[in-house]
Length: 157
Image (cartoon, rainbow, N blue to C red; front, side, top):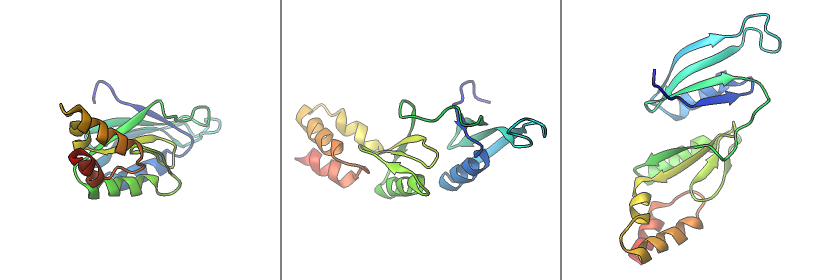
């Protein structure tokens, strides 16, 4: 096990989250699971926690109930190499009730925030040519889903 693992608090839908994330991320698997006792009030026999791995990152999915919800102060970033990869994650993660936001941000159907952006974005925003970087930033700030070609066009001027 990794020393540090994000723990995602879910509300009686850990099994649904496992199915969703393993369908979106092909390189994912459940490592182990624990269950509440059959007589646990409100959770009898349900999954308590699951250790899973998604793209070499380990997570704990905790079936904690309705007390806590995700918010935008914590998000996970997906670095994509192609527009097709951006499109895939964008469509897959918002499926079933997710929400889109701006600058490559979205929420999945569980309310978990994700950033889907291309590797080239960091390079363009950190370019030594400040005007070029600012053009890219201005274009990116108007986007919902990141479009690589539009970033490249902005970089060219």
